[in-house]
Length: 170
Image (cartoon, rainbow, N blue to C red; front, top):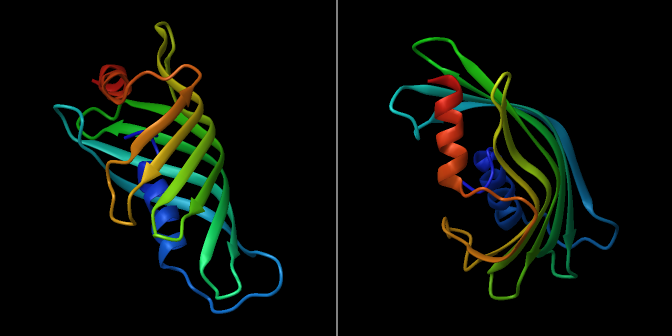
């Protein structure tokens, strides 16, 4: 989990690498819409529901043959983690652009800029944060463990972010 909205990121990459509208001579294809996804968060010793809401705007750029070559996704998301046993919850924001460059060999580079995760609890303060710039390299569309090429800004590791979420709602 490099961002609290990992499922949204995976959806963006899958959409980008699986979308081929044919030859496009005009500007980018633009998709705008709401995000409202619920899933389970499996890092705690108790059941947690992860509810992501917000908006996303995607610009897809194609070459002369209709192949996706670049995608810019601007998003503003609110992620709420709720302990299914107690009802306790904590909220994080994720906002910024993701810029995906698809290479001729079907590998891809992803640049995430902005706020990825921020776990704050009243009375306790900031427990974990991932913000700044993150550059990832995916070997192919099925790569679930991309290489981290560059990281700038405060970035607690994924284990720390997960532990902060569990602590906040445990």
